[in-house]
Image 1 (tube, rainbow, N blue to C red):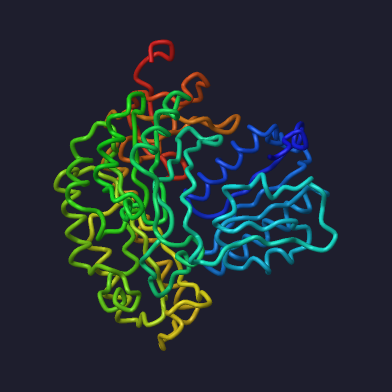
Image 2 (cartoon, rainbow, N blue to C red):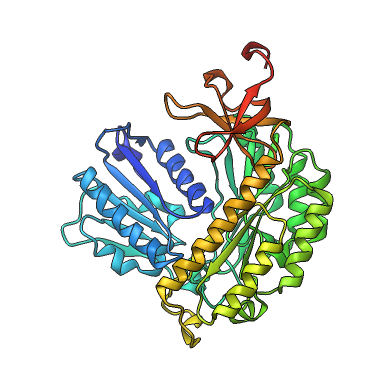
Length: 445
């Protein structure tokens, strides 16, 4: 039994790197701490505990994790430092050796975070790492948390069985596993009771939902759609080969599931997709985009693309660029390939020079900007419902339309977490959002 008296009046700070799933899990750790009597440190306050949830998708991510740890150790002298996440699972001894780190928790351990806090005394002999081998990472730890944002993040699935040649995530997260539909519906009902308006479904490979329970992702979507009180759902990144027509057709007729998709492509060249050991080709990907747009012409579609992977010749890149250019998508999330120890990609001969990776990234980023700007511009003059969010003091409020257009409106505190009708007037000065006009007096919204 944990003696929570040790934690009373203690304070904690949290720092998350990486994906929405990490954010969800950090928020859950925060909730566990809060229930044990540990409150979140106020801005400028020295914390008793620092929690860093790490990412390891690229070498740059690893570097950012180390920098974040050093920074928090310096900002909160004497704090008990706990590190978890993908970098912690993959390189536990490296992380434990960082000056100031007390405990490192792997994928299987973080759900029991309170058990590893001890008496919060700093270790004089360096950090201690607790991880499990890949074959023993089996537990699905539920998470549905908001933190300080308007929307909730519901973890529906964890792990991945795909083992693409460039990726370490299966080694960091383990095999695909999930909660039951009944348990996830129950979590969403609780979120609705707490005032949640929007839920984002998160996971490592959410389309693979059902490996643990024998259920289907399509049935999960339909069950969540029935929960009273939730106004919006968004499906985070889903593999194209797992995004079946049944899900697309259901989203098209649902009032709650938003016309917003994020689909990883990784390369628009079939030869490169084979080198990556992806489970689809460009023809299948194009058919998914066409299906979505035929039913939801105004759907926002984000696409992940990796540039400079081993084996991506100049000709292969040009093929890929032309394919992406031809797609009716909204935004590109562009990543430069990063060598990951232990991955099969290291066996591929052709290596793209760093300067060339940068050039290719810039070309795709410019293409993304053109596509996003055109998508936003097409909606100027329309009136759409916007879920408004709290913003920094002195800044306009912002929120998103159903199809994920970022909108700014004059600041009215009472509209936080409210869905309001907004006329989209034009771009802001930075070109990053559309300015909007509220179409009713604040008291009547």
